[in-house]
Image (cartoon, rainbow, N blue to C red; front, side, top):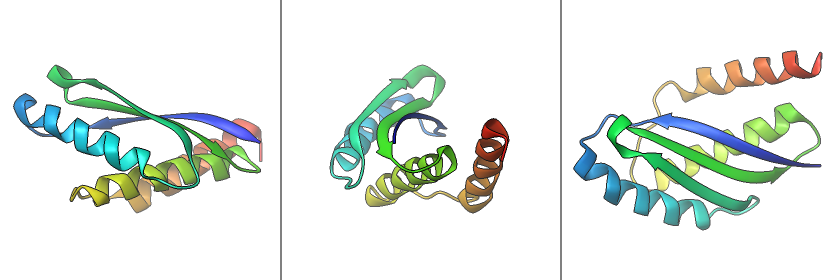
Length: 102
């Protein structure tokens, strides 16, 4: 099954740095495998980046994990760090399970 996902990121960086960062992150997202139609939107003044993509998975939980993992891989590819994401992935998985009543 295909799932459209959207992940909102908060970035703590000056607005001037965010423009170049979004270009690099968009390129890294397009280089990802196992996802389709990756896209990046931004509200630079707010330090917010919206990452969307389509992933194929058997369950909502698996789709969510795949999208989060792909986003994290793109962040790491451009030299970014993702402290605390292990906890985030577990929390999102629990929320996805609750949504489907598992």
